[in-house]
Image 1 (cartoon, rainbow, N blue to C red):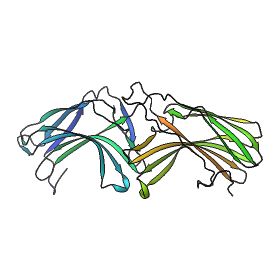
Image 2 (cartoon, rainbow, N blue to C red):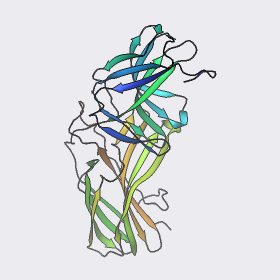
Image 3 (cartoon, rainbow, N blue to C red):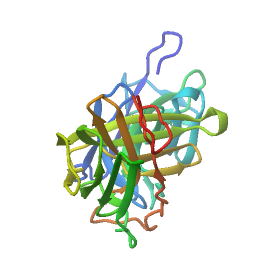
Image 4 (spheres, rainbow, N blue to C red):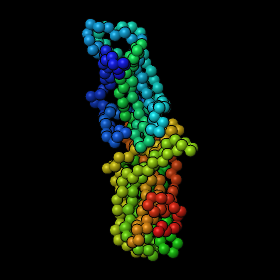
Length: 329
């Protein structure tokens, strides 16, 4: 970081312990690109070295102290001036003095609690990073290194199947069921749709996974819907008594675990959206919330957060919610 045109007099490098064998993970940036960072889990120690290299050997670097911080923060894009820190650990590496030569400092944050998963969405970002600061009178020299945190969960003890009905009086009556309501990120959604009454001409049917990101509270709540996956499961007009199988593999899509009321700042929920389109291009919707979780060999110290699954029923046209059991013209 420069100040009034003066160049930095030193460079900072952060070297993590065990980085040769540590896994890396990808995360999206705000502009949609993907970047890779070292992967950590809840309760894992974060340690390494801070190397400070003087730009000109033989000169001295006056400072008011050197510190390293482990930070977890949430940034809401509509309130960029405020970063909400939920984790902040600090270790002093050096007292005020002069650096006369290149220097290396070791640091260790033992068994660090990392309660939430790293996330970059449409309106919010949750990130973890290390920050090293050389405190100076005019301008600090700062270096940050991002980390990615994945939250692993136990297999849910209660995982009931989803069974629902949808219909339009005297026109359409279908039942659909999914094998369970909670899925890990590499799971397979298996289901079946039964046609009990068909008196309208259906042209095709599709199923989609929708991610709903909610930020803010009260009147300042923002909802952002994103269709993660969509594919056609039927083409043509079904008749009474027919059934349509569903088999959707989740591993090929960019999904995160369900996140509920993270630090009272945001939530991320997922829905299965069933859409029927008739020959007059009227669209009939039915949504059902599902819970996604990350499975791994290592498990969190805290069991999976029990997130209630709520059924939402929507019959809409052009993605505008309407009341159930009605057609859209």
